[in-house]
Image (cartoon, one colour):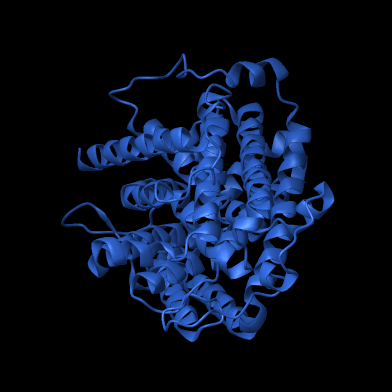
Length: 466
């Protein structure tokens, strides 16, 4: 079933696509494993700074008590990713095209804007996480004594001196801009084989995260009984007050939102089209979803367990950046703590940096009836816009002197408000699929996931308004 582009012509088959392989498929275990890839990209995008920071702080504050959140969110994510994959492989139209034909172009644009909003906030947290990782290696930039905060004699409140704004903040903003320009240049250089480059790069970066956080876990020596008890769903027995624990609830919301990423799952439909998968590839697509998202859940659990074993008892408010977390872990790892943790954060930020912006660009181009292939100039142009929007929001956070870790959690929570429309769109399109294309357990899990997303969105709105 060939994809139709916006000008009505069939797309060029992707490199290694099913169109080139003929009507038959080899379904041996090794063959299937060699062909997986799209969900690894999704996992790499989702396993960004939000997941790393949220999991670390959750383990620090509640030890193993909320470990169960991750496998639950992972199952929800597997179901939604598998659903989106099936839509992309089976359905004639791209997701936003289907919305436009049934509900009108404004409805499709609303879906595209919801994705672009979520991507901008994710991208802002990625920019700030890049600062966290780099400061973990080199430390925070020093501010000269004569440019420290000044005191207004009339008001008795601190105010920032102009030289301070010109050196410390601009140094960070300029560093983030430089990295964004580097990513933009890399994207344009690799435009002809961009998807293949992304798949390979994401696999290596996920591997780097596994290695870095596995080393953390090895030195942390966590309690096996604590891990087992943490897998039983419950609220923390201590330090928990439902009406007063706003920050804790937001951290939990960020943890679920970053593991159960509706935006990343929505993009899976476009990835399988880019790869050339059809209904004959559903078996490998299901395996891809389980392996890719399973890896996401496993790594996130390792991060939380490491935080529970090495950071529990420390005030979570002191974990403002990667360097602070590294210092807290130093009794376990010694002087190498800063570098071990920073490598993991850096790999997480880099892995989600370009692809996150591409997600927003591809979906928005579909929403406004433009081509969606990664080789098309319009997609790359909107990717640049998404990158620069994220940089602008992150720059504001630096100028306003918002703590980086708190900003990341806050930004990830705000994305929960934008994504219910994406979840509704996936489930609506899944209901149009031919009978038997999805395993029976998937749709009931999707409905549970939608309820979770709506509850998180409502809770976030209430807490931000209060």
